[in-house]
Length: 322
Ligand code: 13P
Ligand code: SF4
Image 1 (cartoon, rainbow, N blue to C red):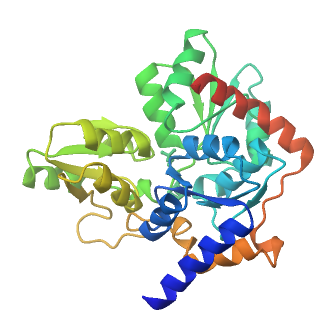
Image 2 (cartoon, rainbow, N blue to C red):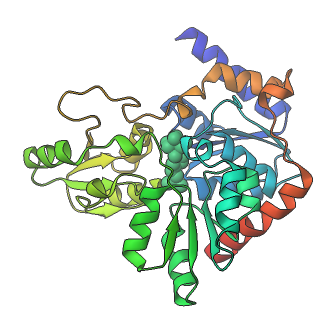
């Protein structure tokens, strides 16, 4: 409508004025993803968002996603201004892994290599030996396992169990989960598969093991989009945040995409396959972030010492991925 069009025009003008670029995650609303594409920004998974932000020459990054993504950008690009539509967009994995208790857990097992998912605070990253995202986690743990390292893994227990199963690595697991993926239901998924016998099931590994067990492909958001593009099936049942359908349908226009069931047997779902924090990234919020009249509501700052310590495990990941 008219208000949205005006907001988009304003954002485009502000992006130019502030030498800013919009970096969006696949789980944000389609209109945000489209705007990022239209304005020369990027839409991607968390690994690629970090890389794009670091390498882009713009002075300001506006990160449409959740807080850990903004913090990662600041850690990688301390001289850039990092703005977010709202600093209240957090993540259940980050919330469920406070630095004090996580640090105690690590201290209790000093012979373990600490590997943390990117969905964590700067302080948790600073305590880690490695940071990983879902697209590179398996390879990095394989690499560590080949050196006979014992691993502390945090915070996503489902992703951790999947990787432990795939690699056979010795992993001590923090018990966190993503509230969105945790709700996918294997029983209802089995029923849905019966209705679509030719469909392939695509699953993000933050989902429970019983759901991952039904998958034809398991991977990060970008890997699932690739799977929809390259697999021969004409129908896909997709177990991840529904924000992904925008890019997946664009990448595989002839394919039939179906959302995997959450909250089976008629029970109501809580997140209903859409992250409540990703949903906070609206056009108006992007506009006020770019205006940045109240930096305490939009701008990411990371303590200098934490930043230097968190950069090491992040760089280790990016060097490994390169
Ligand atoms: P990826 O995009 O790296 O797969 O991460 C998924 C996620 O949970 C981001 O919130
Ligand atoms: Fe966190 Fe899950 Fe939301 Fe991603 S989808 S930000 S992992 S709560």
